[in-house]
Image (tube, rainbow, N blue to C red; front, top):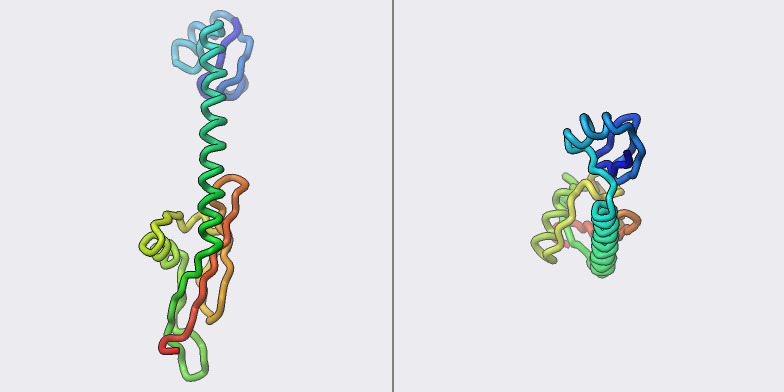
Length: 150
C-alpha cells in the first residue's frame, strides 16, 4: 500500500514522503497512529497544495527579512560608556542592549540569538555586527560606542 507520511518514521521515511509499505503495517500502525494517510488523488493534491503554501510562506518571510536587512544597514545605534583615566571602557554593550534599543527606537524586533558576531562590545569605536535574519539573509547593523561626555 502506498502512503504519505505525516511525520518522520524511523526506517520508513521522512515527513511528506510517499512510500510503499505492507498493507498490515500501513493500516494497523501508520494510519492508526496518525503517522500516515493512504495515497489517493485527494491526499496527493492536499500534499501538493501544502508544499506550495510552504514555498509561498518561505519566499514571503525571505522578502520581509531582506526589507529589514535594508533598514538595518541605514541605522547607526549610539551608545555611551564611562571611561577611566587611561581611556579604557568601564562596562560593555551586550547584544541584549542592542536588541532593546532596536525595539524601542526603531520598532524592529530581532532575537539576540540571531547575531552572528557574539560577545560583548567593550571598546570605543564603530562596530559592524552581522545578523542572520532568515535562512540565507544576513543583515548588518552599525553600532557606535563613544565616551560619556564627549
